[in-house]
Amino acid sequence: MEHHADLVVLGAGPSGSATAALAPRHGFARALALESAGQVGGCWPYYYDSLTLFSPARYSALPGMPFPGDGDRCPTRDEVVDYQRACARRLDADIRTSTTVTSVQPRDGAWVVRTEEGAEFTALAVVAATGAFRSPYTPAVPGGRRHGARRRPGCRVGQAGRTASRSR
Image (cartoon, rainbow, N blue to C red; front, side):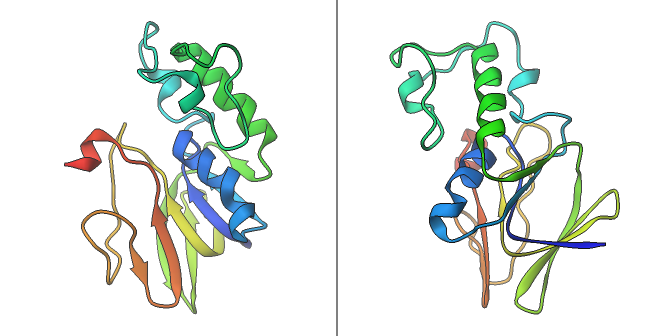
């Protein structure tokens, strides 16, 4: 069965959540985030217990969703995980966890996203916000550049997030 969204975001970690949060401001009324893990929050739930952000909370919040508490403190791993879950509940987006994407292909001026479970979604735009925690993957898109946004004539696709491994 095929479903349609204006925007499909691959990943529901910090970059994917920020992308979904901003989607309506950029004309995407129906945003869908597909997350392979069983929960939102990207890799944060799997990091070591004593991890803290290296930046203050005020600079680590999603658009329109301030980090609770003192904005000058560096939040702990558990605070980041709780924040990500709370933000996901507030987002005006359909977030599906335990959903592994197997392919993204252009078709008739749109994108077709297929999942391991056999679901198929069409979208006007796709953003890859999969992170670099497990197996970073940057799709080859005709006309794309090594770093930054990748474009195909007539279709919109982007890559969100900028990790240290992607900056090299």
